[in-house]
Length: 205
Image (cartoon, rainbow, N blue to C red; front, side, top):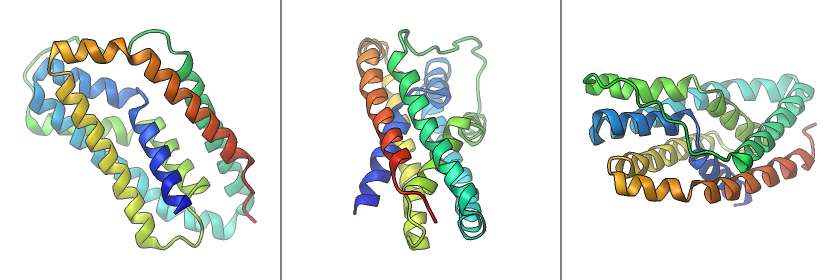
């Protein structure tokens, strides 16, 4: 149960922390309308599975053959959480969203922009790798690990669907941006705390 709670908390905090995926969904929603934003959100959720797939395949071999390397990745992942938490906490400006352009976009193109944004996103790469190496246990059943990956995708889809809906309306957009700094500080504090706690957890052997 503790593992499930940890995965859930880290996933939710990582999802709502502003990044390239947030900016992409916002941009699509503004420039091309709600449908384009919703398709980008779906693409982002699908992009998460790219990272989950190669992480699950690689981490098993990593644990079996190179526990020292596993511990190195563990600390790198913890440092990433602390870094992201700090950067989120000290962020002073609103999320920078590029609103240039405005040519019509196809449904496939809208889906593709979301997918590529997360499939190529270092933030998502490190989030997934650090979660599977630091939180998920070696003896966790494969089907449970798959379930965690599906939850990560679902959380991304749900959050960015809300973002697309919010940023399709100017009034809701302004309300969200007014509270962004407070949200950033709360997320940043928790992420730093999680990173420190995970770094101090017992190492693999």
